[in-house]
Image (tube, rainbow, N blue to C red; front, side, top):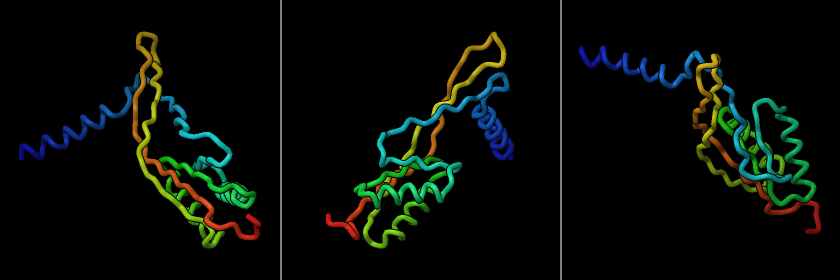
Length: 142
């Protein structure tokens, strides 16, 4: 019985330590962008799915050889769905290469009172990077 009583307390202590103190506000920084370019698209939950799909299709139909989709956290499912939609629309002329990983995200801790110092905390988020590349160009002389 002694072990049962101590385990919930340890869980409560761990939860308290992970949350920022009530004396601080958390300001989330934007994640670092690994690559820049016209063919690199960052997928978010806020952007319209249809607009993201049209942008990807326009890039591939205008002669772009590959596009790279990046998704973090809750946007991973949307990113994978987008890649599958593109693969379906281009019916066999595109292939995908998927890499998963973890990204470190930094949050700034701003004190609510003057006697405290500024701080930061690091948290981890899952990420997916999907490379979609053309294997055949339909309707093109290339």
